[in-house]
Length: 591
Image (cartoon, rainbow, N blue to C red; front, side, top):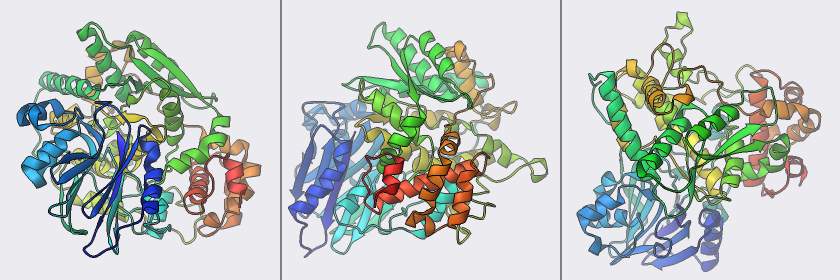
């Protein structure tokens, strides 16, 4: 796991100076604390910040193949299989990422079709002045580009492109409206004008500093619904899950698990525990769970502790307090350069900080709700309107509050475009899931995981988001996805057999963070600070903002107040240059 960046220049363009490249590399350094390398090859500059996971001694990048060089951020889980097919004598390192380069030598543009993993890859061929950029189909690993007057720059994060002076800071008002209403942004354009994301599964071909071709690979198998019985489906799921967790555990460094106590992380825990039983040995299984200093929200930490004990894991509960919230929220907003106002960034960042003391890799259950149809919004969207049915995300955070000016009107356009584009899903339910997999998953959940973990030099892996798992379950009948009003039916059945103590069919308390309660406790102090921020005054009526923060106890006002607080901090740090190391009040007060 690493950070990558670079610039490929147009003919006749003057190459950027060393100071620019140094700023670029410095802004990527947190992603790769084990070393930074800058290399100029032909008409390209390549930057790699390394976090050593596999081949600790010999896996430095760029990795070369004649006139070509590759830098990569990710893990290639089928590297052993590819090495066997290509022949290990063609390799120069033990790095799993080298298989991407060897496949490129063999297949050129189609090389990514053979990769199983999470990755953002750049391969530059100096002889042909050609750059290939590619991102994994689920969008687990991020990749951004900026089209410049003198070429194209790319990076694992948006912020280094700004820090290097390649793109000026600014705000896209359309994406800002999306962020405020959805708490994330959709599609390729980011909130920074001039910086775009490679879409999940996108392959970009750049010749002499200009984009010449784009292709895209779907993470989901095509085809109609399969007629399959439950036992056969369970057997197939078991094989896919165990294989996926097995390859996701491959590392030359300590690893563990983020365990919420929910179905998804409990599934990963059960599989990891079984692998150790089958092997008869292995390193201790480490697990971390977040809990909060309040009695007013659901607390799954005791349930998680019981599961960890049943699975034989060494378990630690990380207490997230209101003091943590006020002290560390600027640092958390600071790591979210591509902003996500999902309050789960708070426990994720704090869990990552603690886990990094004992491990370099953590597995998590991200993707389970999307692949296995866990969200209640899917069930609501399938109902007729007269039974309470409504489309997903039909209302924004600020709808009906009369706070923003002007009232956002087109904030759902990106989502609607994606929803209309999904035409080959096997069922209507699967189409709803596919929309989430295309937008919510990469642009909220996975982005949050990437930034919060990489801020501490920690790699996150998501074994439920794997081609083998998707192939096993995507075309199943809806009756194996939802039954008796509960989603994730087949996954619950598997977990019931594998880890009975999880009680997967019992009502779950869910997961939340008491941000509304914490904000309410400091509302008198916070209200004038937020209302006076230039970033907030530009979008909202200050009197209405102050009123909002004095009344954050409802289901509507709490999320709105949290979103404004996050946006104010994010803007202070990423657009106004404030230090991310102060507490909330210091950051908002400093000028």
